Image (spheres, rainbow, N blue to C red):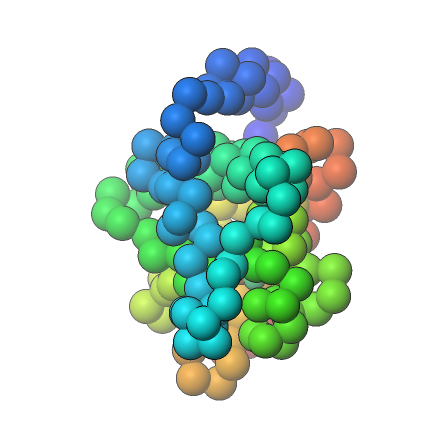
Length: 166
Ligand SMILES: [Zn+2]
């Protein structure tokens, strides 16, 4: 990605900072990115605990949507299901997430994919078109998903892509 494009995106990002608190981008909402089947099963709320935290998480999620999820959604041309976006500490522990998971800050999302092949295709598109931080094709033996993260401070993005043999 060339520098000019990144700068252009940056100013666009500032303009988008928005209006509707719950809408993160054209096709993604805060509810969607905070939904957790595990939390529902355990009857707990998967939502930032304080207003400050909510603000921070929302901005991070909004950036993730702006930088990766919405462009990918536009490319794919149909809905993308987010298995897991933001997670509270408790929910992260319940799903076996690592302590420093980017899900805790709203910087990461796990995208439902139909196959490893589709995951690779999406991952390659993201590689070429987005300024992501980390991307992993993950599997629990039963299903596969694409984990992708982005940091608002682009300088900190690692741009890691590990290809997993699944
Ligand atoms: Zn993940």
